[in-house]
Image (tube, rainbow, N blue to C red):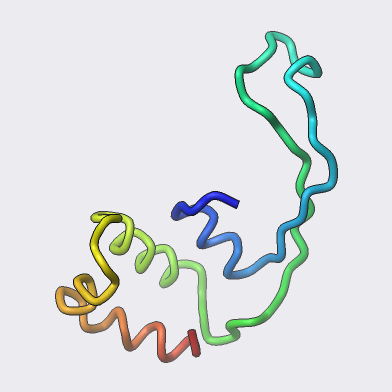
Length: 88
């Protein structure tokens, strides 16, 4: 799964698996991308984590994606506290 804000948020709460690949010819008009049907199985690996806080953290981290997390931690000290609360 690609590294993005959406994938981070989804993988924090679900295990993702591919059910079937769908060829472009299955659609009209035919897209220029590959598609797949996925299965999302909920898990509770991070019980202290809620979606809105994770999304806020992801928004900060992906604001400057080439920077290290330590860069963002200096700007947002509460970021580390949220990760520690969630036991990440």
